[in-house]
Amino acid sequence: MVMLDSFQAHSRDLLEGLKDLEGLSELRGDDGITRTVAELAEKLASNSFYLVVLGEFKRGKSTFINSLLGTKLLPTSVVPLTSIVTILYYGEREKIEVIFLDDTRKETKREGLPDYVTEKGNPGNEKKVKRVEISYPSDYLKGGVHIIDTPGVGSIFEDNTKVTYDFLPKVDAALFLISADPPISRAELDFLKDVSKYVNKIFFIQNKIDYIPDEDDRNESMMFSRKVIEDALGSQVEIYPLSAKMALTGKLNKDPELIEASYLPRLDSLLADFLTREKGKILLQSIYKNARKLLSDEEFAIQLEQRAIATPLEELENKIRLFEEKIEEIQDEKQSNSYMFEVEIKRIMDGLDRDLERLRKRVLPKLYDELNDIGKSHRNLDIKEYIKVIEDALRKGIVKTFDEWIMKEEEKLNEDYSRISRQYSDRANKIIDILVKASAELFDIQLEYVKGEEELSTDKRFYYLLGDPPRFFDLAGAIDFFSRTFLPKGLSQAKVLRDVMKKLPERIDANCGRVRADFMYRIRESFLKFRWDLNSKIDATTESIRQALNKAMEMKKNSAIEMEKRQAQLKEQQERLESLKKEFGAMEKRLASL
Figure 1 (spheres, rainbow, N blue to C red):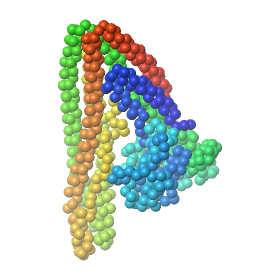
Figure 2: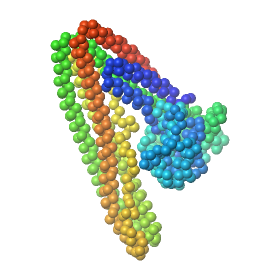
Figure 3: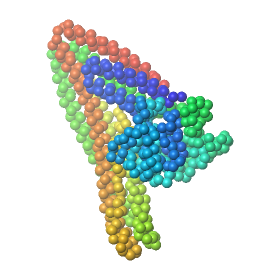
Figure 4: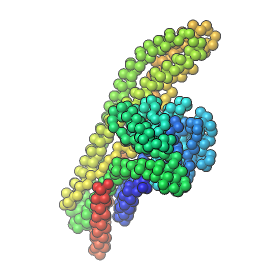
């Protein structure tokens, strides 16, 4: 089964409908509607969905992705890959780009990829690679699907685990690979518990089933892994067998029997169903609802112009004056709405400050006690080992505490953001309703009310500030040089501990400030963008109505023949619009069948 066939078919239908609607709005000169339709089409065409392949080191993640694509695109190795995330997306031709930490880019060939993503070619990421992006002409990547290859969790390289954990918030669905031999490990279970906090949909895949030829032994291994996972997560799961190696070999050799024996077609079908029904349907319905709203707006504009042309000049001038008065009232409503938004932003930031203060009061005393205990219990070590112990304690204490707090605080802020944005969206839509209904009543037009659908954020989270994470503690800067060199061991250890304790409050405050600034920037960017989008919709509706009335006024100044010609054009546009309504009605039925 070709992945996403159903979703792509519905996308094509909807894109065609949007193209027809865009053509009508261009014909009428409705720039606001034309622009919004183009934005909807771009959103549908470029919709991104992150399908991330996760798992412990050497579970066959890269081979699995290669088997989906049917080519040896990603390097596979008997040693770990370095801490680089690789993002694959659809493109008409194969193109591999390496993005460095300074955001410069370098294109490379397939054979040159190991020089950047393997520990052998790029030890410890000495080449300072941020990520690799690969465009490739595969059906698996159509429809906005991005397949992500992450470094293996549990390898000897700590940075690999950190990079994979850092990527979890971006995950829409996960393919969690375990192995048939050996079965799931304790480290994988710990990782899985963390993944489940971020990801609602996880496909469990037991790879390398070819390592266990006996079917009974294979089933026993899968039953064992399933029970262990269910006990860890507290919910039922299903595990899908796979031999990525067999699937890739089968595709390379065009051997359908080997592909079937690999169990890939079954997994392919499951992924297609999920992406179409659970993810694709939501996107399509959202685009459809907004397109129907624009179609309704265009219909109203046509009817408004028709009625306005038929209205005596003096009466028309009076109604236009009343409409402009209503616009003045609406400007006041917009200002009130914006003020409400600013108040809510301040309220969120005040809550963030309170949470940060509670973090300070909770963290500092606990860290003081822990560092004192650790320092006293390791007095037998030399100064270099002693500093390493203190450094490890700080990493486990400060960094872990901040990481956990940031994750929880982000969830809380997301809830607040969603609630406030919905309130603002509702108020903006009410303003639009008032505007449209007022003009409809002036010209006695019956409205077919179609509500648009607002999306708070394309990735269901607020704006992300890209950049380096905070450096929570600079141990070298906290410890006096003489503490590490010339003093006797006992005095050096005591001075190391005092230096760290003295610097600790300052560093905690500095990082609290950094976190606050980061959150504040992200919150304001999200709110301002959302407010701008909604105000643009209000302005577009205002402009569309004003434009229709102005066209009618211009017609009043022309000859009777020109007025008749314009009325004929409007009638033709109305017929074209009726055809579009039928087209969108058929789409609605097809979407309901998904």
